[in-house]
Length: 70
Image (cartoon, rainbow, N blue to C red; front, side, top):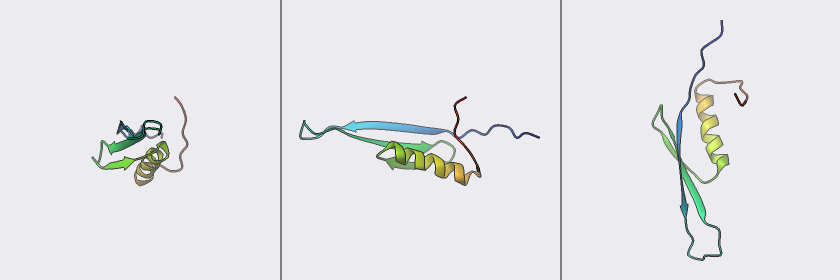
């Protein structure tokens, strides 16, 4: 019997911090909130966003898994 689909929901907030030296790139920072557990993690890259999501999937027992577009 096939199990029903499970949903994991996250809220991603991003903001841009200007630099004092205009020729330097701006700094992008973010925060990922797990809407089920209300846990938050501050991130500085999409790789860190991926780590947060992967850790939550691991904790939820979603393994083995693969990513795929619908």
